[in-house]
Amino acid sequence: MMKMTYDVVIIGAGLAGYSAALAAIKNNKKVLVTAKGLGNFYSASGYIDFLGYYPANSRKPLQNPKNSLKELIGNNPKHPYSLIGEKAIEAAFSIFLQTSKEMGLPYTGTMDENVLMPSAAGALIPTSLYPVTADKRVTETHELFVVGIKEMADFYPAYAAHNLKKQLKASIKHTWVALELGIGRELNSYDIALAMEKAEIRQRLVDQLKKAAVKGSLLAIPAVLGVKASQETIKNIEEELECRVLEFPTLPPSVMGYRLAENLKNYLELQGVDFIVGHPVSHVQYDGRICKEIGITTGSGRIKKIKANSFVLATGGVLSEGLFVYPGKIKETVFGLPVGMVQEAVPENFFNMDEFSISYAGVMTNEKLQPVKPGTQEVLYENIYIAGATLAGYDPFIEKSGNGVALASGYKAGLMAVTGRDTDE
Image (cartoon, rainbow, N blue to C red; front, side, top):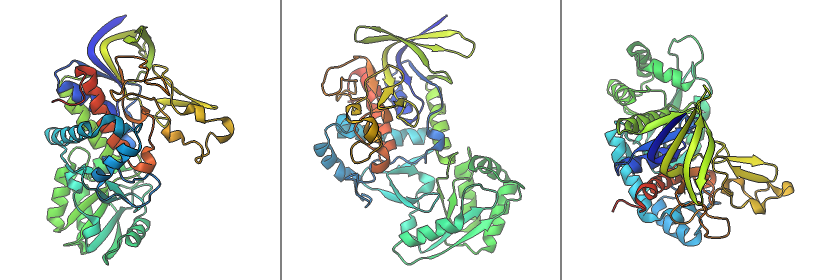
């Protein structure tokens, strides 16, 4: 039997978990991230969507999400952003931007502005933070080329170009072009991104685009321009073609999400964070309202008992099975914490959006992000903190707020776990 001791153990390897780890290491604490899998990073866009729509039923993207944040907090006291608070949200975004530069994948953007970025289907979606290489405004271009790749599965450039044309109000010259890399078989976006780091493959793309007369235009290309050398690859293509290149997210696997995940993980490891990935938590030991340790059973059957002063739960929601749906109820899968809003669901209306939205279900917390008994402020466990999609009270898909809540709640939970404060001040 192995025993390990940490200042804080973070359960979950998505953006919320990594953000919590970032907060903890900034305070020189001994940190472990453990998870049964690698989180949703590898299917996510790689953008940080702070708040795209408010009210949630509005279909008009917010231009200045920070202005709407005050209204949201005033109207929805149980929303994660209300519990986190403006000060902690701003601190989390600021630290992330600084860290992105330090880890070699610089991001840009601001909480004061949403930028419309194209999706794989050509829909324009609002986001707040994005890689520096994506800092090109498709809404301000006058000549747009949507680039397709014959070997790429599940991307249709004509369809994406048509959708973009319908949404862009400005009169633009637009077209699409399908290229062939000569690889000889259909590949997913990650495989193509790896191939694109080879000079001869990249040159085939450049040579074909030169024939398409793209000089001076904006090229909208699926995010396949390299995995570890994307910035250099994009710069090289822009210089050779004398144009601008805008990558946009693909269907899973998402190369933009992969880049962010791998750079953050490598950064945290260099800062001394330990990782145990691939094994779920198998048991938990409490002493009253204090969690003393968790246990992880490895593939060999050995038990790792891990003690910590504090724990951050960032296992996600229903999609990542941090919350598990049973007939008529939902359960949190690590600590067995009660899930809020379940009392509103009965079998006959469980998936009726007018009466109950499953997306709003989650663990209820106080402003310290400690779990509380639903309907009360009774703290269930004093040294457990909740972050990300495990939190109750919001719909990340409708609001377009998922990564923003993950980033901000993870950072606050990490700080609360190691300092008892919600900012570094």
